Image 1: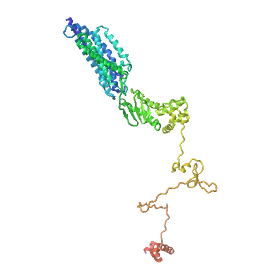
Image 2: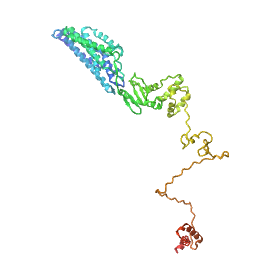
Image 3: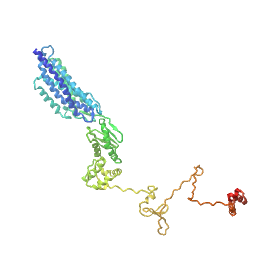
Length: 553
């Protein structure tokens, strides 16, 4: 009964695995989280985060597996009583621990994948990344457990931890080729780069091959079977080939990734990496004023594109190439606009005074507060100009601004050209006469003084005539032709305010025969062609001159 109770106590200790799995899962998530760029979801960085999780949590898993191997070694005296192979118990334990390790890593992969999908992700997930990380994590568990089985001492877990921690932490990313050995040390991947799939495949083969070498070597040692030698040699060969291939990769674990840009077309075409779509509104607000103020200069641009960090930046052909912060820290849009302006004004200033004048223009171009300069008069004058006047000034003095050759004299605006008189064509003789201050002869021979607006009259050759004020010609109203139908105009009768009273005719009033004769003579003269006589005309006129009362009678 005592031996049975001992076996039960040993089996009950395996329940510690149920506590170790969630703890390792939490530790893996915490180790992977710093590798994820805030605000950016890039699947290549997610793969690096998974590799870093295996790199930092692997030593802890190896120490726990070594502790389990030391505890399981005490039950070998009972397992020796059976007819099974002595390595069977160790293989079953390894299968259980490897399954638990894969479950832990799968949980970490799920958390990282969900976190990437909840943001604007870019790129494509590749299965070789999680496979390389999982194989490295299982390798730590197998190596730690076999170390506990071979050396069943209480200090064995600490020795395993002391051996695996330097291997994981003391290899800097991007160093020698052995930094690519699992668990590989990777730095954050740029948005225009990707992990080399051949390197990931070699890392997975190296970890799986070394795991097979450890398991087959331990089994061959315990069972003393020669049949396990060929598989062991094959596993060693695979591990060696993977090591050579990783050594050939050297410090080039990344490759350029062809990526289509995400663009915003209005009011300015701005294109960035798809993972940085959220930066488009702030970039548009910060760069559009700069592009508008540089219009008409050699540095004008209508398109902004994000380029890789190793590509040159600058303005060429109307395209401004920028390098954008992948973390999208506060003020990234303003820094992008400042970098564009810095590429435009790459010529250093010869003196601090010239740099002060350039800083005054730089502040206006970037929409910032102008810095205080010793020449306050120039600063006040430049600050009082309108936006259109500043843009005109910049187009005129762009070469001096670019070469940092500014001075107080360059901030004096030119006087506007005199405007031609109303109705005069530019370049005509009348337009050239304005502003001369002397008498000029116009096209009609009339001399006038432009500054006074008074004509002096035609030249007579008898001295200076008396000036008289010119009166503008009144435009004549066009008269429509008579053959066209017109709308009859209303007749406006002009009435006196108080018309004189007409005297009423009296019955005794006699007609004025003299008037009648004159009227008849006038009508005969007018209507002489009709053949009327003077008598007839007088007869027709007399009734009209008689009073109304006499005609009625």
